[in-house]
Image 1: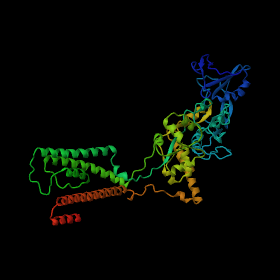
Image 2: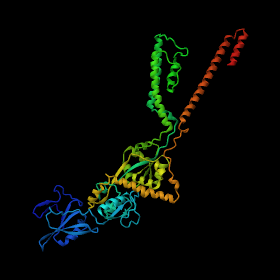
Image 3: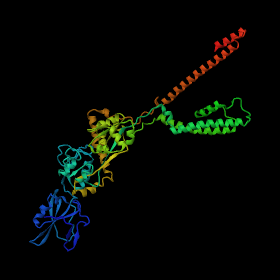
Image 4: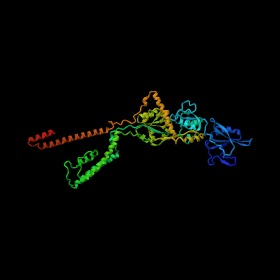
Length: 569
């Protein structure tokens, strides 16, 4: 028989508490356990039993040797025999001077741990048939084990692909497949690259600290330069143009008001130069409009109030035109770039085609279950892409296409398959969704959790995961890709793109000026035709009046003069 007890009688007759009396629950990986049997010969098979004792971390076996009338205390050093458990006999001493519950999971002494992983090449890659120890080929999780956990805990590992190649799926009959299923079925000690969900935490244990981070974001291509005749209007926004127009109308009204007020007061204007005509309405309009173009209005007004207003108006137009010219130079020499969607809301409102790279069902089901209008519309419009998803990134490079995918998948795909020029065209949106955090997955109450949890917690503050990922993508993915391209004479993929672009002024840069010139010429032609027609009509009407005036006259000479005048016009 064996019992899990919470209070024991110490050798000095005092009662000590193993677990708090107000918390009857206990954990296999952190609480001390004491197993009691009446037969000392049963202590070893009891402590090594896979039913429960061997799965508890801190444990003692107690028995009484009736022949010698002495207490027998034994424990298990899990990995003392080259990674295999050894039963140790503990001295009968006071607990105050001897630690009966040492942590034996700090040195695994070469034990081979079984590690299961899903088919996610972006994070770890192991060649089949998954044999041998320390058999991972590449990936940031390989670096975690090889360079961080193995030196610390002195163990080896063998990695193998999960049943079903996924992270964890509960079948209708209640069984699990994937990495979670392999841990539950005791085919693996540790599972990696597995996200925490409500169902999974009921059957397995996740480390409290996480090593890997994954999330959904979308990738587009870099914006192209926008060449438009409307660039002449871009230096100011609609509000600014509205205020400039209102100021122009107000200036004309004030100009006219001052001029009328001065005329009504019968102020005598003396010493007006002969080349300074009066400031009529046409000249006022001409002055207000041409001041924006730094054109001379043909003299200054003689009235002091008008002179003051003109000086202030010219100062105002000086500021406006200076700002306009300054911004126009930048718009013409360096055209604006196309505005890219940076959030999912902007993506839905844009004219971009959208593809969703479906790796597993959890992210897709999360979006599908959302009632947010942005995600509802996005789900209705996006294209579902399965497989490795390379075509999704290729479409993003080639056209106005947004690819929604896991960040770890896109980082690996672009490093593995795209050229440097194509990679530079990709733009990762800053907004993310469906963020998941991944540590190690162990059996419920695993004895490894406490130690691994403590040391994995050091990877994030020192950004080790990010450094290992960047190192893996460059040395183990990108450089072999380039070497293969060179070996197969695919040098066209190694060509560098012109990232700076051509800044020479072309017709596209100043097309707005030519469009404006064309419009002005058309207006001038219309005005010219209108003037000719009006002048001809006036002369015809004048000649008709003269003919009617002298129609009844006997002076044939006058009639001839009129006919001659008419023929000349």
